Length: 371
Image (tube, rainbow, N blue to C red):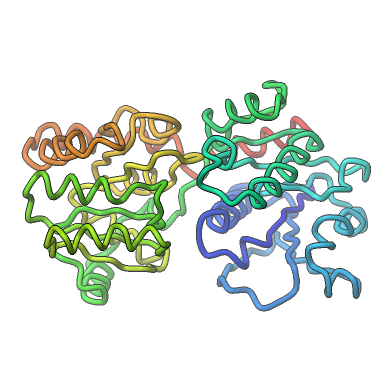
């Protein structure tokens, strides 16, 4: 097959949709190199160093209009270039496909990550919600098949857009290979020194935003009177100020914020943490949970939405807005060694459902339904 991808975010987005794009492309090219892969990306110098293999071609706009108006190119002109490249299947990796692809004769699939903007509209500006709804709804309607990254997302697509469930395949997001192997002693020592990582700590990874609910972790630590540090890795938003104000008002000194850590360094943070805590209110899937499970680090996460899908039987589930519930879970994992060992073992076993080989096989099976 000659497979085309919307690769804009693979080259220009360092997290979230960018990670999904890079991991999906890498997983497929690493396991099914007999196919030819074409990455369609706007002009400009990439902000992410993404290395591709010999079966991959990077494609940019071929005409003047496409180079000057990249949005117009991605939305309207791209199908002409796909036909010129004899593409069999086009995969929109981040919730959208070109407006004109339906009538181009080229088969398409779109990945929908979440519909949080419809589930929790109060978290998004009005104009953003309307733009997302038009793009996502049309893409779901026009694509030959839809990939949802969780059963939760599949249910939301059916509920909000009225799409036939038989058109939707659930294919979980892959986990970067860096998290699937143990960091060596030299790497651990170097990264611990670089970031001044404490000997023992709890870990949170993710943007510091209201939806991801870091404040509940901080409140739980205050309730439990624990001395163990909390390391927070992730970009900041206006919500960060609310968390920091609470920390200052309660005179808490054991919380460390690190805004950005490279993907190849992040496994050291996971693998050496006592517990990974992820009390998010809502996600499309929750890839940090998978990163922790592969790292053999016990996970505490929310008991609602997609989180039991991501964490499986080897995670500890709590009410994400109940700080006492979270405090109890933290204390149990720190003090009950047999329970902790059971959680780690079951979590790592469950993570094997998300290996690169299995994710790649599931993606190719979706493609073969179309082509």
